[in-house]
Image (tube, rainbow, N blue to C red; front, side, top):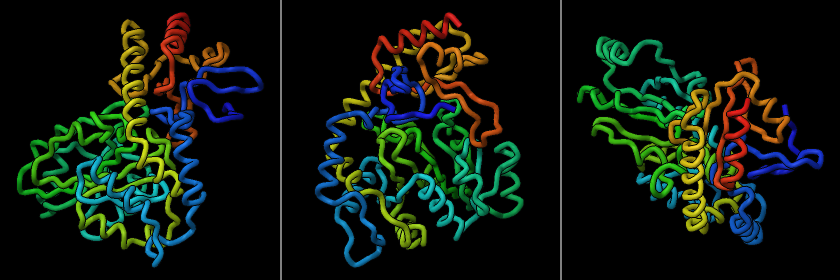
Length: 343
């Protein structure tokens, strides 16, 4: 474990020594972006650090409504509702659907969804599972799944849904925490790659921390499901996200676009640098998996920090991942690639 002593960006300082930082998330590098931080400071001046009030009180802040409307527009959904975390938004998405139908989970699925007592893990192949639903006369159900598995950085292939018989009606609960903000022409996330049959209804949930550096989460979908989320105890009794973050999101469109372009350039550049490395895997996301045992301590000795830990449980085998963000310079990526090749 490496205990940081300051916020990381493209680098971090530990005991006076500078390290290149390829861990964590913050894909767009907004935590060290001065213009974005200025917007947050503006928001603090306008709304304070926290708004300790129920979202259903008689004195709501208008900035949250504007925040939700912008998220709905971004994701091309009818409505959106924001929560204080992505975990809470994922839990709420499962719980509101479970009131009307069974919720099943398929890997990859974040523990916020898959470890919920109302979610059932699919243990068979997809076609067998559908056959079992037909035999049980259960043609309407929900399926929870992540848009991206962040451990190998793999985008989920949703093509298996195209062959679902039209007799089924499925609510697809997609956790897009690792796609929203950087994937798609405008950062709209996984919807930029989805082409679902009309019998499959999409309900998105996500953390806004991975790309947007906002300590908040959201559920986006039809008016029906969003309204149910707004009636749920998880929403009505929880403190909302920091209002200054909502303010920053509303005014940072140009910053998001610039940083998204820089991130895509960095992903492409590191792909080119590692194209001959048989031990490095990347599938177009900001995450590069390095299949070299003990590479993390070696890189650390050379002032480079990567992600290397067991997940979702500490006892799981560590996975070595290089996480690229928009702040990294070409020289950073060149140094990293050179060190990996020499190991």
